[in-house]
Length: 294
Image (cartoon, rainbow, N blue to C red; front, side, top):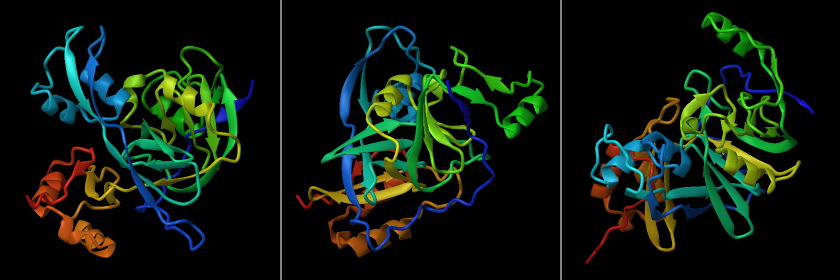
């Protein structure tokens, strides 16, 4: 049994992400997720569905013509859309965009997307290149002093260490990264996934982190970026994905989108009225904004 000291970070400056080096292959963009129907199970809520599938509550509600306070009924059929743009930068196997709250796993020509929880606005997850430096099942959590201080300030019992148990917030899997004592782990609160909810670490649904644990190794490389706006041409169509700038590091601006389209040479292909709608709505899903000349 190992011991894990995690998620104790200083306030770090967060930019849009680290630039590619001259040795890196050019970024490539692919779409993950799609559109499907989900049969409501007992206990399902909009929050749980959002966390499990990586789609915002507002997007799910609007897509199904519902209201946030509507009760979900077992057997009810909901339409879910969770299409995201995965922008793969550099040679690494993992690409994480904090603004998307998505982790992308690259395996050959295939890319899989997983929703994650990331650091609170007051405790942001750092960006940069990393490698996996440790993996552990059933970890013990050594509570950082900063989190102990938070417990004390909130009048909660101060815990210094927590062995493996159903109450351990790390869950059953821990993947330690070379970034400022943080890692990727499971959670005992699945509804917190796809949110800004942690002290810097990245949480995944228990089933997702178990799958990831078996598919990465010590030495696996990756990158963490913070990019609220992602635009790319994929298979001849232009897609735009916009999230709120929660960390207030990369303002969502039309001018930036226009510059990207000009630089990449597809500005004449873009429906700019659609772009403005996507920027205003900030639904957090990849939207086809290709101009339809028909």
